[in-house]
Length: 156
Image (cartoon, rainbow, N blue to C red; front, side, top):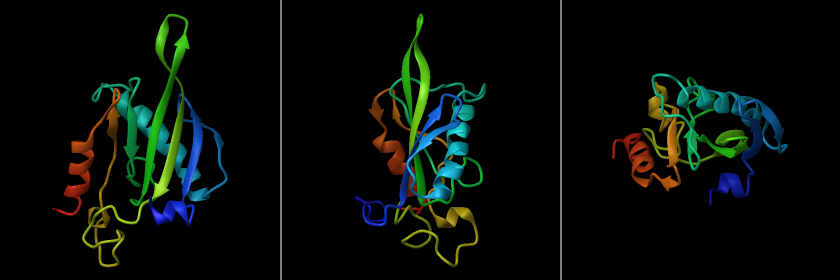
């Protein structure tokens, strides 16, 4: 468990509407909560876009951290978004709301351990940039995919 989360309490949790609007949050880190709504809204748009077209299915868990494209605050703050599905008439695949959490990770790659090195000149030099990734796809954890994302950030 990350020291940043366990001892510094550098994490936040919140509930969002099916469109990504903030409903309720724990009073943790304000910068997380201000940006997290945009992260959830971005994931809704991204996965339901006509180009991507994959949609969000029961059993999916989404992850992102990109501050310029996907509503992240900075790369070490990784956001995990989980849709909650329920029944509405004949549709049992309707998203009712989202649960999301964002936590600060000590190292997510980059040109030096610890992320956010002072000599970085580009965002990619600070670590793994995750715009949109299904960490869990229809109930199956994508160990290989997330490992590749993180390894590629340090050119291992």
